[in-house]
Structures are given as structure tokens and as C-alpha cells.
Length: 613
Image (tube, rainbow, N blue to C red; front, side):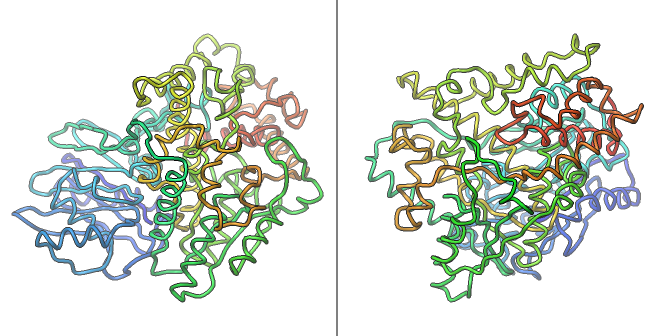
């Protein structure tokens, strides 16, 4: 994995470009600490921070290759899982290769197929190709949006990067947040509208989209989306096909020239990936697979059962690790580990995030990085197979609005009275919700239940899943760790999209179809365990620590957060240690101390990024 940055602008001289490009690329060093290279020519400048995973010598970037009187320059962040298949296709068309890197395959794919090259690629990626003579820039992002790609269209030029901070490091870009940006934070945060970068001049190439910039014009089109069609397979055939696609996706993603491991939470998704990886390691005599789980200091003492977190994970983790003979490490985070990374988590995300849900993952990835450079994780299964309560709870299916944002009253209450006339939190949230509902690919003739299921799946795929993928990318790359997500394989997503809810909810259990597909791979105790979300700390010291941080902010007369939020309402929230609001701010976990920490993160973001409202 890597960090990429590019800048096209004829107004600057090459020597000016070099120092500015270096400054922009330096903000992405955490994404690629192993090497930094740049290429500058004419109006174009590209930088590449590299994390070496495959072919250390042959994968250097920016990668340059000539053909047909044109020079092509590639900047690529990602991993291709069908490298050999695509290389063989290209060889059959007469192309030759000097390395075994997927980077060269991506570049030659563009040289052969142009913008259609993305349709040949199975992987996670964000990349650019510059055609030097034609002065044409191509940008593309993977189908499910695992790898990020932001841009700022300047009219006479364009900038792009893996993270917003690299674009914000350019002297011409101001950290301005307009009314829509404020709405994004208040109505939707910590999620955001697909394609929006919150800052006024920043945008995002959406998942499954590609763009061309030429002669000062930017054109963007969608090259992939799920397509609705009748599902004609029997239940047994569906189970077999899901198993086959999952196994293939997981096995493909084990390719690496460096040490690899898996996240193991004891839930169905990570346990299944672990079992497949361990079996592959055994077959290929690659040694013992390393697995990792997170826990919190004194968790057994303070853990409180609730509807979202019915039990702890350790017994299930041990069962999976023992069965697959993995070398398992439990990493135990202290309160200080979580609190000390709350600010860094904001800086990695470039936005206020999910409090300790982010900072704990950052710490965990740092710990994992001490052992491996690549890890596989179970993200995306819940969104694809219907694992969340809002897929089957009647009240969630029938309500308008995102089911993971049930805190509209709380969000409105915390806002200053004098700006409530300019901000309509509910209107903006419902507007963005409706846009996605209207975009859902429906199938003519389906009943209302089937239609609603498609809409809910599409909302989850384009919103909740994107928020979690963004979190996983920023926190893992913040630790220079590459994380792969087999459940995001587009072939699996395309197939499951058309499977009816009655099959997905087999035996009236969330992810019932997936559980049937994994029979024999996992022990039944794990396979039929009730879903447990990512674990959070229940330690009272964490609550005390974030309340102390908020006390400092409350004591600062110039604290930027109070240009938006009401100081009295935030003081009341903090005095109650978060208990005055019992509805999660977002998702299932962001309540109480997590909300206080989120507001502290917002203040840090506004200070550090010098946000101009």
C-alpha cells in the first residue's frame, strides 16, 4: 500500500513544483515509509510514498513506460488480486514485463485498454495515469471504495491525493468549510456524503468511478455498480456459490512478499478468513499463521452486557485459534493508549471521527505492525449479508432516514441557538438519505419488502460500509500496515446483491446464508454466535480522561468548537459524563464518553486544521 499525490498546473515553474510536491507528499509518509519518489515534467508533478509488499525492486513508482509515441506515468496505491490473470491476457496481446509487480500490470492495462482497464482489475486500488504528450490525466478508484482518492479541480489545473491533508498542504488550498460542510458534520458525522470532502474545494472520486482531466475539463463516470436481476439459484446452490466466491477471494488476498496475519475477533467474519488463511498456510507449507485480537485493560471487571454486545470475545477467539493452530496474540490496550491517540486519529482521518473506536484501532494496528506488514480483516460482511439489526428490525425498516443516525434530537439540542435558523440538521440528513434511496438499482415487479431490502442494502454499502472502510484504511495506514478485506470482492458483492432476504436471513438469524456457507470451516459455537460489534472500553478511567479534556476545552473562551455548539449544553453533557444523552450519536457504540470524545476531536480538528467556517 502507498500514498499518492499529483498536481497538474502550468502556472508554476518546475523548481517551485518540486518543493511544494515534497511538502504535500510528506503528509502521506505514514502510508508509505519505505520509499519516496517523484516525477516532474511540464505541467505535471507526481509523488509516491511506498509501503513495500510485493516486488521491492520492480514496483518502484512513479512508474514510466513508453509506447506508440506516448509516455505514460503511473501513480498507484493498492493491491491487485488477479495480477497473473491480467498479465497473461496482456502477454497474449504482445506486451512484455520486466517485473512481477502488480504495478506494472496496472500500467500496461491502461496502455492496452485505456479507461476500460478498470473493468479487468480485481483488487483494491486508487491510481492515476498521466499521458505526457497528450497532457491527459486518468484517475480511478476500486469498485467498493477500499482505497481512498481525493481531488481538487482548480479549473486551470487539478490536484489529487490519497488523503485530504496532502491537498490541504498546497498553499493555494484553504481549509474552508461552507454551509454544506457544516451540515455534513452535524447531520451525518462521522460519516459523509459519497464524493464530498467536507472542505469547500475538496471532493472524492466515488467508489466504482473513474475520471479524465484534459484541457482544463474534468469528466467523471461510473464504471461499476450492482445490477438487479432475478435470483434463480436454489438455496443449496446459493450456499455453494457464496462459499466458492468467499474461498476464492480470501485465498487470492494471501499473496504477499512480506509477513502476513489476520485480525481475529471471534466473530463469524474474521474467524472464517482466519480458517481459510490457516489452511492455505498449511497446504503451502508457509509456517504458522499469526492472528491478532484486541482487548482492554480490566475489561472483565467493567464489561456491561447490552443488546449490541451480549458477550465477550476471548473464548471464541481461543476456539478458532486452537482449531486452526495459529500463533495468536492478544493485545491489551490501556486507557492511556486510547486517549493518547484520539488526536492522532483525527489527523489521520482529516475529520472528527469515531472517538476510541478509531484510536483503539490505530493502537491495535501499531501493535500488529510490530509482527506483520499485511493483515486480512472481516469488514463488509455485515453490509453485504445483512448483519446489522436495522436490516430486520421492523421500526428501522419502516423509518425514514439512516438507521445508524437516530440522534437528530441530540444533534440539534447541542447546536447554538443563534445558528439553528441557518442549519437544518434533519432536512440535510433526509436529503442525502433520499438521494441514495433514489439511486438504488431496483428490479421491476418486486414487492415492497424486496424493494426496501435493496434500498437498505444500498444505503449500507454506500454509507455505513464506506465509513468503516475509511476508518480501517486511515488507522491501518497510520501504522503503515496494509489491511485487505476479502468480503469486499466485487464478484461476491454482485452475487449476494440479488439473493433474496429470505435466504440471507436463513433460520431467522442475521447473516444466516453466510453461516450456512461456512459450515465445516468454523466450529458451530462460533458459526451460530450472535453478532458482536467491534469491542469498546467500559473503563471508568476512559470516561474521566475525556471529561477532563472537555473541561479544558470548556475553560477556553476561544475554543473553536463553540462557534457551532452551545457551551451550556456541552457542559451539561460533560457534567453527566455522557449520561444525559443515551441515544448513540452514530451506529451502535458512539454514546456517553464516546460522544464527549467525538466533540473533543472536533475541537482538535478545528484548531489543528485552522478550519475557516
